[in-house]
Amino acid sequence: MTAGVPGTAYLLAGLGVMFLVTLALRAAPFLALTRLRDSGVVRYLGRTMPAGVMVVLVVYTLRDTATELGSWVPAAVALGLTLAVHLAFRRAAASIVLGTATYMLLQTLLV
Picture 1 (cartoon, rainbow, N blue to C red):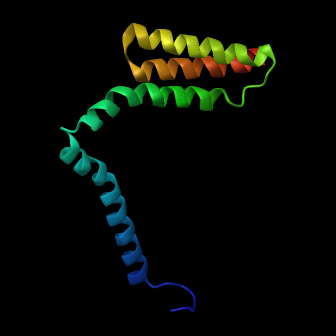
Picture 2 (spheres, one colour):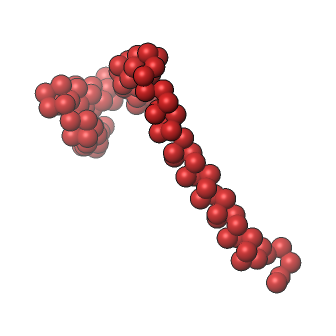
Picture 3 (cartoon, helix red, strand yellow):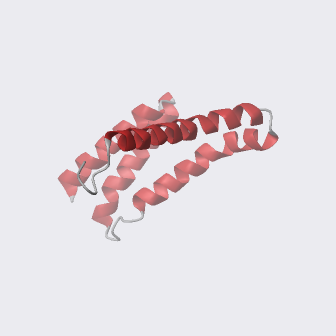
């Protein structure tokens, strides 16, 4: 074995540890939720968090939009369309994809 190069057993052990940590981190929320399912706090967060997360995403998306009106038009139109599609059809994936495509198209054509 060359100096400084880890052996096969070392690499496999490292991969095994990464696998176990990843598996544990993915399973932890589900295990915690089964124990907290009847909690009033979890029910409250389940009702209020989606709206809060969406507000954070909108602010994060629009934070770098320049101050001139032309750069706000694609964002405003895409945001309005996303909201309208979501309210009409209640399909998050459809509203996100359509809103993103609209924003990218308008950004390409107008700015």
